[in-house]
Image (cartoon, rainbow, N blue to C red; front, side, top):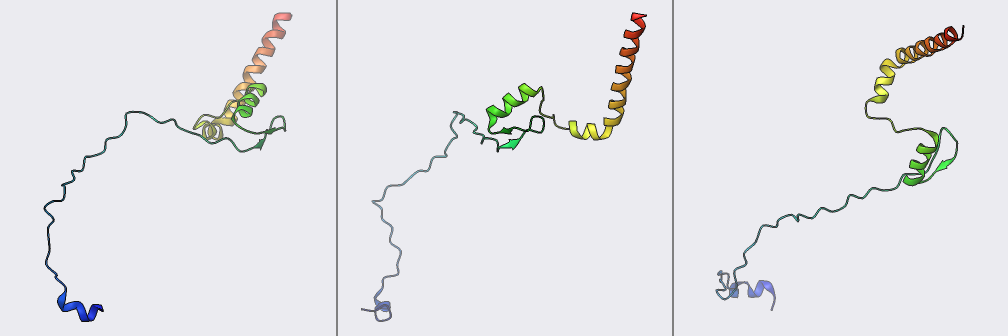
Length: 107
């Protein structure tokens, strides 16, 4: 029987099933356990100091230690752009003063 022919015979009333169990929804709480934060490995790069290829975090850390370098702190680059020449000239003044004092002490 097709839908069009059977349309008049369809019972459109709402029936409630009283035997069905009522489901109570409980709000889910977050676990108190913290999951570890996972970081990806560094991409390979060429060290600007030694020219060797550095691959991964461990190689990066060892390279920093071996070359005596460090990672720039946030805002340090901007500070260098702003005060770099003044700091450089102040460093030269300190070096010249030390050299003069050493020569004067030898005389």
